[in-house]
Length: 459
Image 1: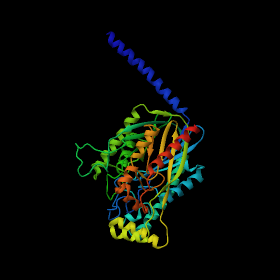
Image 2: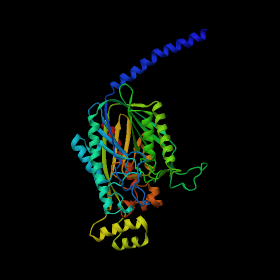
Image 3: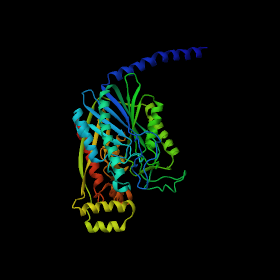
């Protein structure tokens, strides 16, 4: 009897204290100082278009598996400093497009370039964006015109989306944490064909699931931003879809009705989900990733003080010397398929008196939300960068690739020396005549560390 009374007393005590604790949490959120706005827009084409990402495709799209989205999170800290993150179900943002979009947003909202992130999920089941990777594909001029029209509409939609997000600002609290999902496999060190359930996978990877929770003062979820370092290449369908990141966002939005799930790609240029090539696998990996986000939010998330600092820099990355016309003629004769087409395109440029790039202005960006660091890199960044950035800045750092500029593959020094697709041949599809020169990795990592030190000095 005494035991039963004791248990009843504990239950009554907890029933009294838990609402009080919940009220304290609500009060803290009300005075957190953050304000946020969210918006989303369906960008699924209403007609058949060529899909970006795979050179092996031979025809345009044939329907929709699930919609493609762009989503925006507008942020304002306690001092009124603003920024906006746009996540997108596209292969990537060509530099010229990114610059036009950012220029318009800057003028409309009084922002600087450092306050805007344009992130692509890198799904290979979305439309080709204008002329990006043009020599990979075999579509004709009529199809090119249709894709240009879609791209112009897409640009306008991104700008309108950001406008809408800033119009919906409301008080919020931000929390950060990291989940873990063991989906990615290093594709340079493991043969997809030979991979068995018992195979011990080799090579570097980053299985972190960076998670940013955005909640209202009453505790309800407004949005969750999450990332993962793995190529969105599970599917090579002719159906519009966001691949496994699309399924992850669907799963989270079903779990948290009314909230918006936003995915960003990490440094996964040399990482694939394996096995793959089926809708069932894409859905499985999406649900696995969503479960990792859910687990992270159930654990103790770190509250972020309402302080936002942003910085941005472009650094010049040098390429190998450009071959002359005779050199490109040799390349054309020695290659086939998309490699031949890309070499021929560059040969045509030279024969018309135009020049090819010998360097690229590469974007490096860093945000601090409270004490949470977010590093943003352009291009298809290999996993070594995330590993090294975390070694320098801490394991809790969020690292985003595929943002602001669909530059090219960004290989580590090891991959650059080894060659292969990520280190050598992939440059062709981006209209670059040669490999990056050695030193690219240290140049980018040093730039990240310099930006980080600069931001810390400002706090």
